[in-house]
Length: 135
Length: 135
Length: 135
Length: 135
Image 1 (cartoon, rainbow over the protein chains, first blue to last red):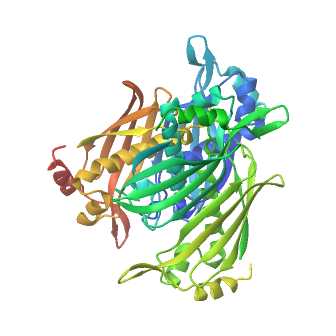
Image 2 (image 1 turned 30 degrees about the vertical axis):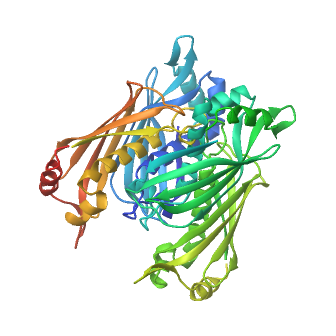
């Protein structure tokens, strides 16, 4: 499953050095992930369907290759790069004008509420469902 | 009811002009409001107690008097300035080094879920409860 | 001068009540303003042309009419509603699926650095320039 | 060099699952770094002293161990964990009530503007200067 989303970088996304304040890059990565889920009903529909409180994060990382500025059009490509029994790994690439500006990775779990607390649920049913969309 | 809270302005709160990006000021106003509620148990406790989905906004405004920069200590004073039957008005003043940098106002309702949708609930019970804390 | 911009509301823009955290609405208003300026070269080009450190805010306000949630497409229309000698007023309307979700206003100045500090410059030259784009 | 900073988690920092939206954790990491620099004059003073446009990021990562919610007090400890010739590595630990909620790492460079573009400057002078503060 994959998706490409474009964001218009704005003045307020940038810091006193005139370049994007880096936590915004994680914000756009997360937004791209949620955008990718829309073809399958979106995050809240999926959570309801699979008895989850959220497709939450256990790890996030990014490597910044080039700066981004106000008025840049940032194109993010997100894809599910790997499924394990209880984690899925997302791979991100951000480009401006054909140049890679960052790469990123997120590891997420399908968190479920149980009598003994929050646990990471088995992913096989979610994987089958998402792969059925063929995107 | 009132509260004074101090925020350390950081690099990432500022824009390419080197001054605070103004939506952050509303973020700090909202955070000051939630900080004020903590003496009474905090927002989620109050929502549960009064059958509300949230003390949400209907109006927000701010007047910017002076700029703020990285490393400034911003002190916000929030108080409930006015109660009407179904709205409460918050008044905010922000200061850096004794100089007023902004004033702000929020109008909020105690939103409740009903069979016919979300409505603004009567505020008298919440007012009595909050005023019992004498702060 | 006017512009219409669409934003995809995402999970991370929303608060524990599941609705948009309101400071984000001001962030999108500001982003719409900067998007509108792009036809005229964008904010930094205009600042350079008119000897300004920024088209900064003196007042901002919004009236919230309806809630927005993850997966909503928010369309913001911004226009310059009024010019005075040293202030310009922006008017904003936000819609989701044809329903108005908020209205907003910003008052901005063309700030210039002088020997005696930052002052609000005369707007006539900027007005003539922006109106020449006929959008 | 190290610093411990405390942040009051607020309602607006949290997402529809009621837990902190993770890009905010990177925002607080960055704010802790800038807070640490204040004993040495702060980021802009250091940039001026060492001819830099900014102590910018090349890598950022975090491992999320436990959730954080509105009203939690988050204590972040940041320290410079490693110096190489042209990169410095920051190590972060976040705690709520004595429990580790996340760990994080940032790799930063002292970016300088040259005739051929932005380059990562030598760090030895900055290291000597920061270590002279003995904190």
